[in-house]
Length: 58
View 1: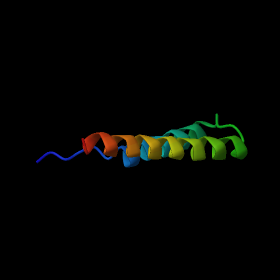
View 2: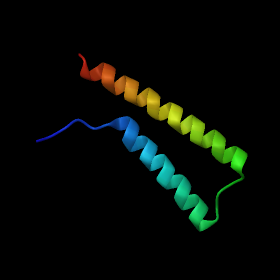
View 3: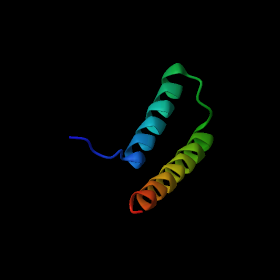
């Protein structure tokens, strides 16, 4: 059985994994920049999820 891709979960998971890898390698910028990247990334993931849902309904 196939199911549709949950783009919001996928993109949010990739964002958190990417941030985690940056902190593990010690190359992450300060917290203010990372908070901005996190908020912008979550917003982008939400936008993509809304677009994907709108396309599916057609």
